[in-house]
Image 1 (spheres, one colour):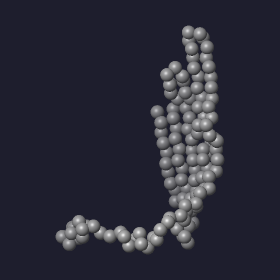
Image 2: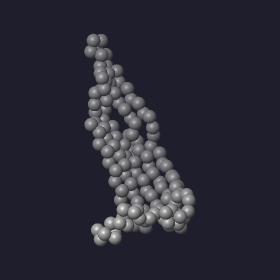
Image 3: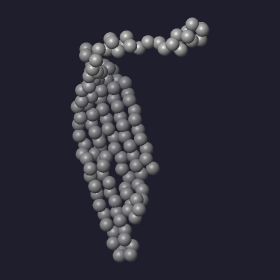
Image 4: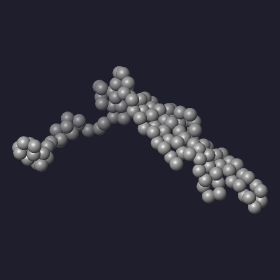
Length: 125
């Protein structure tokens, strides 16, 4: 079974805090038993008013638990149990900046009512 979390919080000074995470319960994969695992990413984002850009600082895999996968394999016929741990990634910080391209005034001017919206308005709906 797997669960996902996505939440955004509005903070003072135009900041946003975003949290994304997942959790997977322990499960059996063929003859292997896999352990439960999960991860949480946290990001702080600021919309820049002067140029329309956005600055974001994210902590990926805050608890350093994302791609740890413990497993064990029991070969009953030989009375042998094998254990293993995989680690695919590490916790890290990511700083990103994005900026919209194009003339925003032209894009706004291109938004107009459709014929059906104008007809509904004339009909009084």
